[in-house]
Length: 210
Image (cartoon, rainbow, N blue to C red; front, side, top):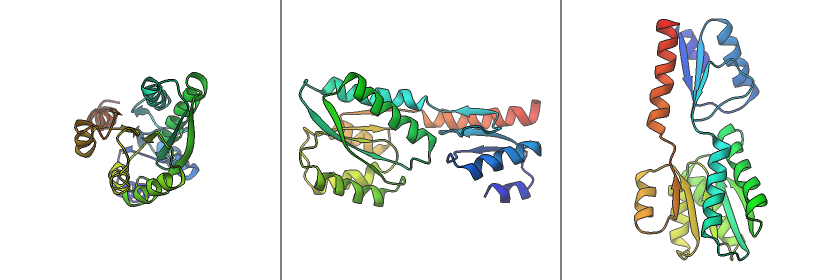
């Protein structure tokens, strides 16, 4: 798609990328041709992109781990993590923040398993079912990326008790509903509108005014 856009004569690119070598090479190649790239929501390392608009993802992982710690009563617990693709730098950094914070500050909370859902509700449904099947004593689940709707379906089908604490990201209508009925304990917002707005604004100012 990046190559197709280049054929159409774009002067700037706003992208939510995966952190893969061929994407980095393409960003660097088009930069040499005068096409500047802005990354939003997730970044790519060692690239010629001119700006990144998004969260401090490692810190957002620390926040999630801290929320589980605040809800913990000092007793041993096991939580499961449903995450997107680890090729996504945001997901990898967020997961790093969760793991490091639990290990350093809340050693009584162990991670039972980390399962990737590729940001798909269908895969998330299956992975959440697997998690609940394999870990009967789980006390919490963290949905680190998209796919909460599928996970919610699996949770409801398995009649998971509300004492199992669920932490999510973003504030979709689905998550909002679950917050109001106490199915989700907490969510961490990321201001996606602002990310999109600022990404396009930066790219436009670069093209128009240098």
